Length: 287
Image (cartoon, rainbow, N blue to C red; front, side, top):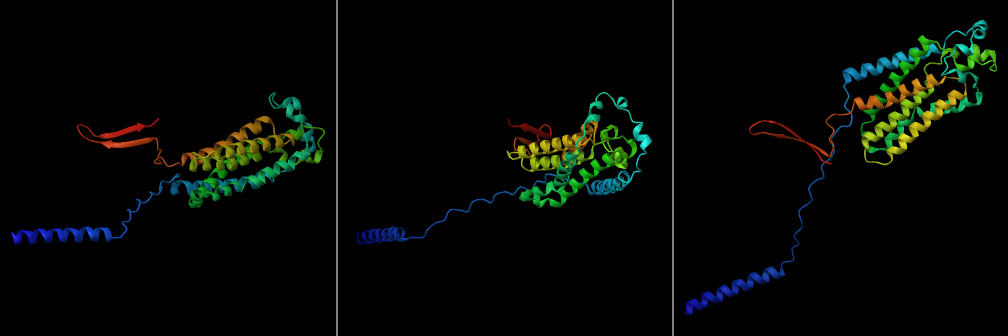
C-alpha cells in the first residue's frame, strides 16, 4: 500500500513538472517559409541564328545599296518633264497631281526621324530589356525587309511623283532625280514598320496591359499623319501611300509574330499527357 502511494505521488509530481515546464516555455514556433514564387522563364520570341542573322545582314546591305542608288539618279530633262500629262495618270491617282504644299515636307521628315529610334521606349519594360539584343535584331530585320521593298521598287519602277506633273511647281524641283521615287512611299512605310513593330512587341510581352492600345493608336496616328503630309507635299500618289503603309505595317507586325515562341504558355490552355489503353495528349481550353 505504501509502495502504491509512492508510485502515485511520483506520477503526480512528474505530471505537474511537465505541465509547469509547458506553461513556462516561451519558445515561439515560426511558420514555415512560403514556397518560392516560380519565375517565368518562358521566351516570348525564338530566333534561328542560321536564318535570322544572314537575313538581317542581307536585307540591311541591300537596303543601304538601294538607298545609294535611288538618291543618286540623274535629273530628268526639261523635255521629259514637259511631256508628262495628267491624263496619263490612272483615274484613282489623278487628282493628286494638283496637290502641292512644300510646307508639309518638313513635318513629314520630323515624323520619319522621330520614329526610327522609337523601339528604344520598350527598354523601360524590364522583361523586354532582358531580351534587348533579340528584340533589336528583330527590329533591324523588319526595317531591312521594308527597306528592300522600298528601294527596290523605286529603283526599278521609276514612277514620277505628283509634283512632277504640276506646272505650279518650280521646274528645278520637278526635274530632280528623286522626283522618280514615287512608288512605293518610303516615309510612311518605314514609320509604319517602326511604330507597328513597337506596338506588337509591347503587346506580346504585356498582353493584359491596357497601355498596349496607346501603342497601337500611336502607330496608326503617326503612320496616317506621315502619309497625309507626304501626299500634301506632292511626293506620292494615293496608291503609293497605300502600298507603302501596308508593306511597312505588315513587316513591323509579322516579323515578331513569326518569331513568337510556339511553346509560350497561355494560362487558359493546358496540354496533359495520358496513358492507359492508349497514349496521347489531352488538350483543354478554359473559357
